[in-house]
Length: 147
Ligand code: HEM
Image (tube, rainbow, N blue to C red; front, side, top):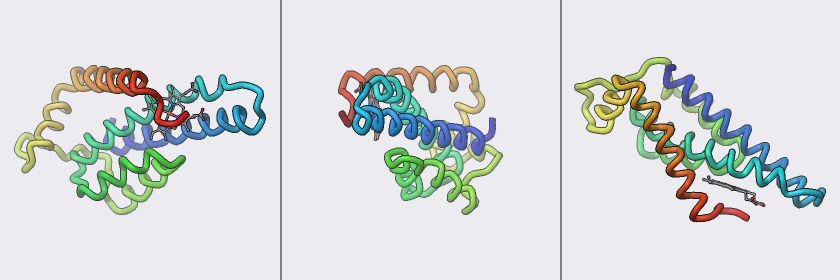
């Protein structure tokens, strides 16, 4: 999987789950029949949100994004569909491509850490899943930010 494909997949997944959550809210508030849509789409969107944010940090470091671009990428997870807009914009500006850039002799410690993750692919995937699950658990214990 290239950085472009990973990031695009998660940006689209985050946007789709946001739309599902909005549909659930429409049924809950406008139609007023059931809250099931929100109860199902809420946690799924939460997982997609956390996975997108984690991937944004790793891929942003790998692709050498500025701090401002990284923050914008994270902020794009909040408004509906903004992750897709952000992914297209960054790709157009040449900040997201098909090659991983992190090397063992990269200038920053963060990029060298990403290089380690790329070389330990299996552990990286397991670590990613565990981190998403742990952060989801913490967020659920803390309570949903809305509602
Ligand atoms: C910026 C990020 C997030 C936004 C903007 C957001 C937004 C929302 C909104 C608008 C709702 C519908 C609330 C309602 O009117 O009933 C909702 C529900 C929910 N969200 Fe999030 N959410 C975010 C992150 C998360 C995270 C990280 C989690 C945890 C994994 C999470 C878990 C939930 C759950 C469980 C519900 C369903 C609540 C219920 O059963 O009524 N959300 N979220």
